[in-house]
Image: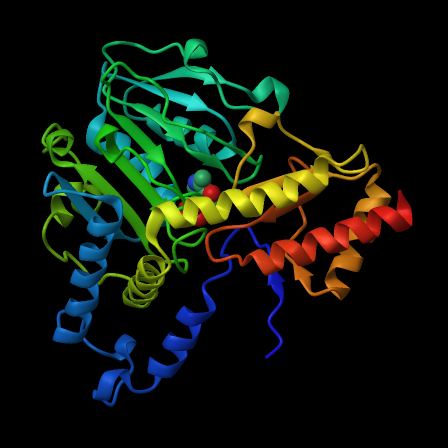
Length: 359
Ligand SMILES: *Cc1c(COP(=O)(O)O)cnc(C)c1O
């Protein structure tokens, strides 16, 4: 077995046990003589997987019956327009907190449907920070406040939910979903593409509070894009393989102590990495310290030549996926739930050695 230390931002590393289980079950799913992805999505095998994933998600997040859960396709990007399609029209307002490329994309779509307000933007400092509550310009009459809990590209993360004086939060949690406990009651909608922290590409998990859902438009929304279409029923074929793997990830998450344990583990991993970055001036974090992400750690080296050398050397050490997004440059180490501490330690050892040789 020659697995690399995988720091890809997404699709990203999955728990080894999950991959192993999927491999075991791939050709003959529990004695059926078929793979699960060759069976009807309305049959007993997939139904068990689907219901199981919902039950586990409820358990992990402490969701009561006041929330709906959807397993949708089209990625988090589809939610950028699906949310305002269902919840915003005409002269209604929604506030958008702009902390990176993904929130800008969500904002752009919302403008097609109603009055989307720019409540804050850190774009003039290349999205290097998260706002304080005092900096937010919120409209009291807004239908919702949209924010991106973790900014995958820039490496910033909200430490806690923004204060919105009771206005429901709508959150793109794609890159830190299930990485830590959260106060779910404050969310009208929480959506996440699975492929960063929760599973493979292909399924988007959407959680909507029922009292907020009750305020959704009932007319003028295309059938497939209306949440009501998917409520309590499988309208069309779900992404069965992605949900199946997601369900296995939830088993793994529960077996490994749930969100509290994930949070602790993630904090420890991030601390190891940021300590190395902060040791001296050789490595330089790209965002303000109190905005730093525990999921995507972004840093630069003294020159672009050294960055190229660093990446080439990393490859030789089986450290993969470290190249930063072009809008930030440098390095990005994505250290999601399934990234073992061993991988972070291997990266830090390589960083220390590289600094000794080149610093
Ligand atoms: C990756 C990502 C997206 C885009 O997700 P898709 O599933 O590719 O549409 C949106 N938001 C955030 C925060 C992301 O990290």
